[in-house]
Image (cartoon, rainbow, N blue to C red; front, side):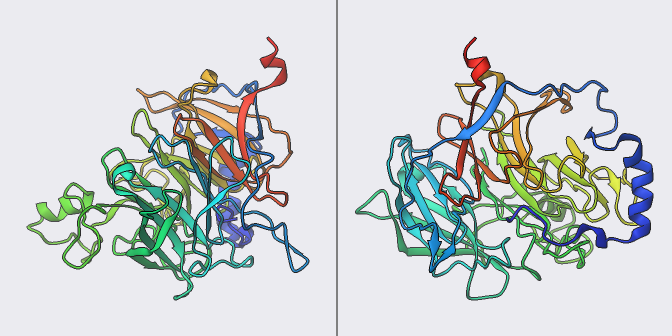
Length: 443
């Protein structure tokens, strides 16, 4: 599971763990924490009368088999999205590289594109694979789709490519149209991040983890010369002098260089693609379709999982801190320039956050404006409510589900704002959605 850190978390220095546990955990063990510290003491944590249920239980996945040569082969639906073209189609990539499309009333999927020959995925290195997919805001006119995956032609390397729909079949991508936009090497196989999404400004936002293993061994999160541990913002409609994309003039470090006579701030070589930094493993980010706010869920290491509101130039602290707490012995939890998470929870509640979407659908008005998210390890689901004016959490309400400990991989929306999530599925029932509980629906 890409969102889950497979390395043992107990290998961090013992003294740091003991000190942090004494200060922060023991007085409030097992409870969810709001962040920052000045959050109001009363947070609504009453369970919602909403439950998670399979969305398309009878859908057949073309080309997928539950076992291969006698070995179980679970369906790995890594995300779910739509094209924004009013077609009603849903798109679900498998982590191994095959992309399915279907409509809600379909009996079987169609294969939109199969990149299995190009995508690197191994069960023992399960944070690699096809990790991101985004349709151009003008997809209906230009037919452009962007894919983000680890490639077989170089170790631990993420490739961002542009593709175009076939002239003969709108339900198929023409594989010959592949155009490489960006290539980023990672030192290890985990902490890839991988989400790509277009913002309301028309630019493409790209999330990368810190490069892998633990503790951010190479210091990438705070290194502005590296693209790792960052959210990038690029213009895929234009080209640069040496790149297949342009850099928006109002990216934060473009402005800094302009103020410095065109020279980069120290250290030299600052990457102008960077929009925000200080992230460990951002496992999923999404834009609120109504407000345009970017939400970033960042997988923690020793103690804290966090949710951040995206902001241009923001430093979310990793690896100087984890959540709102100091991480390095030489750092402080409130150092200058750190952006606090809007919410954090400790490892009694879960150990690997899966970021979701803000609900803007019509079927469940009680979820309106709630950020739906989950924890991969504990399988718990929540609806987080943040006050738009104060940017402070006012509610974090659990959502029941039919399977205890459901390992949620990813979330996504349809064109109407309905929210879904995906799980590793041995029987092909890997897409879930939300409905009122039977008791609530009967009222």
